[in-house]
Length: 283
Image (tube, rainbow, N blue to C red):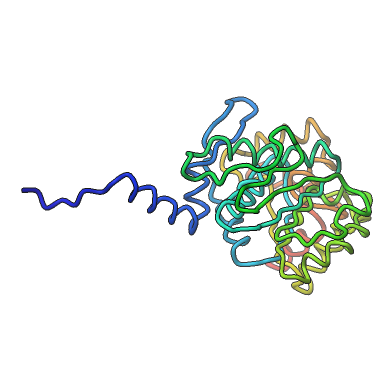
């Protein structure tokens, strides 16, 4: 007679549920689907830098992300929101973005991931399934999306507040002031954006976070993505111009850029003044 213990389907489901609840990376890689612009609906196979961002989310309640374009960070935030909603009761997520369409996009990402989950991971939807700006589960958890205005975050104590492309939001001071109640009651905050110069609150918050540690800083340049090389970066320069490419790809805002040529390799380097000073200090 075999001594191998028979594992029932019920036991497997129980084990997988427990592992998914404790390990967001496992949950996302195995059960979350995303909509790729070229490949269609695919598994969310996280890159190492995305896993590192999740670790930061777990270790720090307040995070500010200065990012390059097209790194999938909004998608990562959507998956993180869904993970919290599934495995925590009455978890309230609020998304504020530049426009209603942008805000709705993040909720759509959550809905796509939820719809493709196995039935035993689903909590059940209690809100109107045609409502593109919100999704509420039977365990009381929900996500809502609103466009940016001075009243967006008022009278809302969110468990997780996501401020998407915050450097481009016009009512940034009013929204952030109203959002303080979320922080004050122990809620989590994720502020993310590509750079947009220095005349905005996002830039000020980033500077304060770097200098005073008010929030955990996450800087994601273009080269954190394993599928990008210098050829990709050069193409962005040709499409956007050097100044815009430096801002959106290298995460440099409000600094003068200097073009250098490495005489040994012939490689062209675009660096900010602060980066140049650091290079000289090393020498």
